[in-house]
Length: 206
Image (cartoon, rainbow, N blue to C red; front, side, top):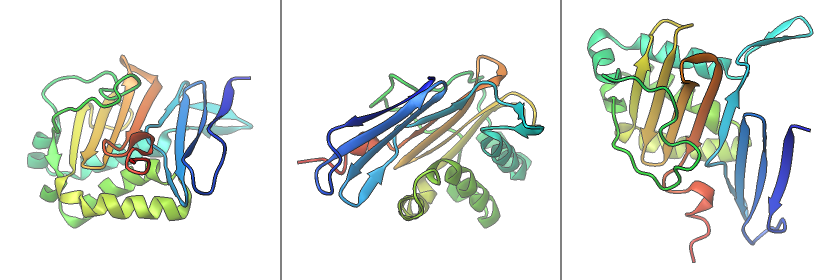
């Protein structure tokens, strides 16, 4: 009863259409045009961030959290100084209602990272991109890799895993944010956007 599915337009092998799946702390938008599909903007979130089911601990955004902390802790002190913002971020900057909003990139450029650190950054990105089918995810990851020198990584908050922290990855065709809400580690929002292709904008141009 907490989740809904909607189709915008009839499914078609050629004409654009869209499927939405969402509800409690989840909003997935997939625009389909022929063989292509785009999953931006989407908001995978979690509240609670950790719970027990059948004796197992479940963390819906555990990988996204842990891989973010692994990345910030893989940076040397000089790199961390560039990546860590000098102000606190407690919510998504480009969350719901921010379609089309443009923000200045902040943090450290991926071109200033070594190959191992860049791999960790891409591993974080794949947590969102990889929600798509393998073929579409591989194409999107290739696009992001091609733009890696112009991709930024920014951090706000604690650097020890388990602490309160926000991070953002921002490149020409990707924006990812991870944000515990207003200081609550048990209430996490994330956003995945493509500033050039939200709602399949590049696919449906006349």
